[in-house]
Length: 146
Image 1: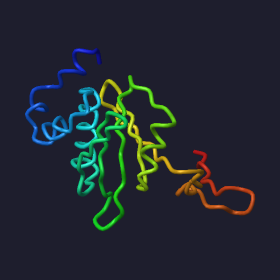
Image 2: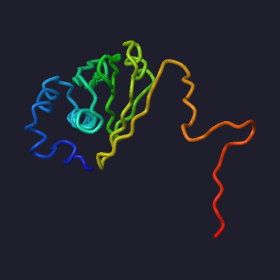
Image 3: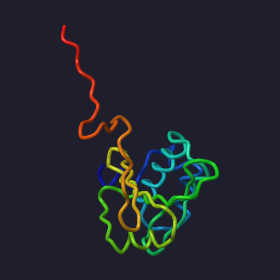
């Protein structure tokens, strides 16, 4: 996506009430606001997250999204990051210090979204769902020879 397209999203987006609300947060980076809107649409329309709202982060000149994955769960902060923009450790620390779990969402120029969960320190990953531990070997299905 070139600079012109980043500055001028499609007309229907500019007229969308949520996009207008995000623009009124006055972050000064229209590409970051556009990325935040794309993430907002993914969270609400595709992933069905609840209570998704835009929050201004003046320290980063960015729009963050605060949302709940499911009703009654703790709110999480989502940082929509356009792929052309770099981020520093200090900026991540600024968001993590807010105390809420954080997702970084990289927004590619073709509108592809990649979510990465960030935490303060190390996080042990969940084991894979498909693999059952049977001693030293993993359970595998054998192919039938025909």
